[in-house]
Image (cartoon, rainbow, N blue to C red):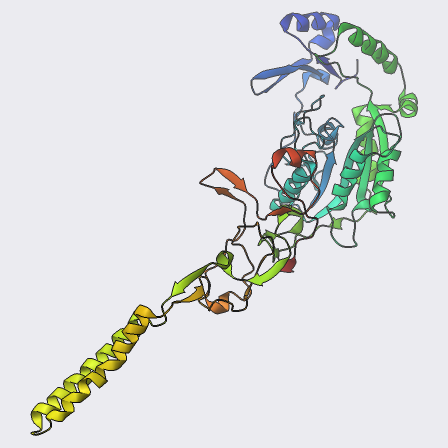
Length: 475
């Protein structure tokens, strides 16, 4: 048996001892047992055979602080080999699943310990996940992860797919998401590697890519692992069938494995290196923009913004055009008038006392006090005027701030352009928040601006769709 060969063993100690007895004494002395525990549940035991019993480095480091600005992103549906491909190429030890539920719950950055100095790898959660997660939301979270990690260029996007001879809606949806990774004319497709899990060609994924971008020329590889996988869910008949096929594959040489596309991990790694380390391939920049939507107030890169916004804007006033009554004359003005009247009356009285025969001037006191009295009567009996609560202008005045044109929208969100000059309080900034009263997530707009996928349909309730773009301007 060749050094470095991995033998998968599942079951308890009795099953392990039975496999150990099958090994020769010399080989058994070099056996290193390694168990993986995830959430307290055993995933099985692997036996790693090393020459001379020497210890090997088990895993590359995952999730460290990375200074690299260049990356390789791995995307695709759940169960298409994203994590296993990352492990083979970088030497990492991410958990690999064999079902319809994604084992990668969030995007993770992996250092390439097999190729120091090369771009970091970013493994993403699987699309079309059995848990019902939205592919669109997973894509946004992937872009946020790249932004947080300061990865501003991509050497490659490794698109993992299952063997499919025809283009279908699922592949088309994935191609649309990949196309969104880059903005403008500098598209990513020249740096896409389609990795097909199977012996068939990748024609289905290629057709989906060309529907998005007719100039797309992605590179393609298809293969199966020479080491077949046996899981606990398989019955004995299936296990016997796999063991029989495995015995046949074990007799093949490198040329036969290449013809039948059943490759060892080393052969897969060499094939990937011939493409991913090609010095002629330049990285594609994916700069992140700092924009703001005039309609809903979201800020940041358009690829990370939520797919909620407000309808077409109209000029209006904050607080849903709310009015309040305002007396025609203020108390301050009445007070000032009475103060002046009292001062005048005091002056008249002083004049009447100081100057003999001037008692007639006392008749001027009511005249001096009349402005304050008249203003008090006006405040008491005149009909109050109605003004806008936000800016204090009278009812009917032209709007000064852009607001949602949806009559059912109760949001106070609007563009601050035109509001500051009137001293209006700032409207809600439309960031994602929690409604403390109802304990619910509140979207930043009143309509969904893209057709939702199945995951979004399950997550959001009572939404209205109106296809449009965010009204963006640079900050």
